[in-house]
Length: 495
RNA sequence: GGUCGGGUGGCCGAGAGGCUAGGCAGAGGUCUGCAAAACCUCCCACAGCGGUUCGAAUCCGCUCUCGACCUCCA
Image (cartoon, rainbow, N blue to C red; front, side, top):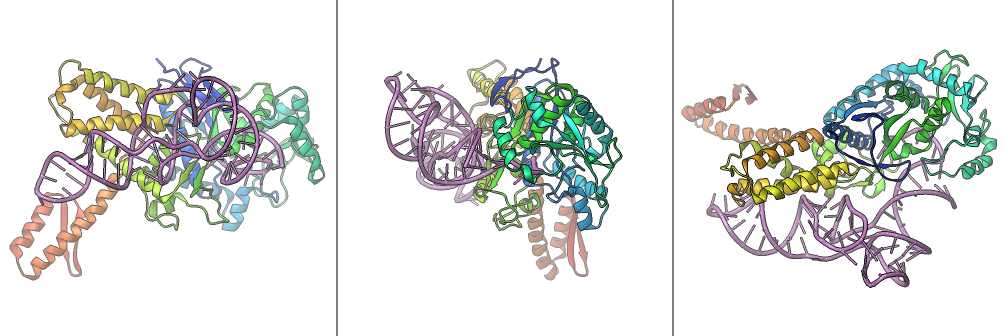
């Protein structure tokens, strides 16, 4: 049994009933990172959002194939140089070395945020053959032309044949054409400014290059996603996701490429995540209004007063809907940290609560079961995590009340309690995937604790009170801490 | 300039014609040797100005304001 979902489809700009192509199965493609520098915090929010979407789809009973690419070629700079190559020159590294380094960094960060690896994570450079094939298909159907060894998509013909160029991004076709006419003179080889490159002939210095029927070159900006989504999910699949800044031109061109090559739309539902702001403004490196994940964790930034753990940051993300912009402020992060802590403390306490619950159903059961169902149905409604979290917090209050005896255990049945317990654990740990990283903090307090104990013990030793000093050492050993008295003082470690 | 999407209480953020969002902060209370935690109660907001309606934070218009895209961008 799968749950019935409603998704906000960017294509229609409204919520729709979700109907998968194959019952019970979902193919989902999400545009992944370009690995030419460290992951941007905004990337993290987007991928955390889609991770929760992926996890929820599985939770809701669907069998999901989740494909998220790694872009390691193909993005042009203003000067026509490939991004990967530029990184390579600056760093004196092989292009693939740059890609590898930042791919590893990206994966580390995804692990830090406790996201699941996608089912397939294809790389653009590993699918050059598929991309060339797609260009051939588009050429064969007349929606592309070759110029000086490069291949361009023919948007005017595509539009003239009645295909929906501009539908996703809400761009008016006439306007696109008009706007284009103005800058026509600036264009080099393209017949029309709104045309875009499918294959680009490599200049002499270009490091990343492959043979093709048209030239030794490299694939265009948008082609990889079309080729790889088709390969792994089929010509038409269920869900395509990405940041909303990719709507145009990237996603629009993906649609054009797919329809141009086989006349079928690539995805039925398009999901777009919104942007992250910092102190009410967009993040911008040039204006210094930016913060990296590492800075956020360490507190090493002028924008925040302290560091916030990855799960605190994740919880902060979860409090906003994926389609809303989210403003990062120190105050908001502090609030998130406290809320997250309250949530996790209660979840952690779940197992230690053993009370004499009622053996038969109660009135309170109904209320609790209701809240449980709400926390799920909010997720059915376009993955409304904030609303679902609100329901979870209502359950948390009930858990704490039971724990402290403000609600009598006899008012709740044992079945209902077990139900609530497993549901809370499931949704918090498996769907929201907020893994308890409070342990890291407790090791901080352990540090402080040990410092204090060892200082006191040092005083005792100065007084040559060996009995007490040894008692401390022995007791600590029993507690799992090994005390090591050395020449330069005393250290300790966990056994 | 064009297109699209926002502006919600002290802060962050859901909601989207009549019905409690939630978190954080603040006030009072219960508990406690004192704290902390937890629980209870209170704090009833929707940028401004018009309009539609029995009724608008929610619909319409205008104004102000923020953001995204239009060029690589999650």
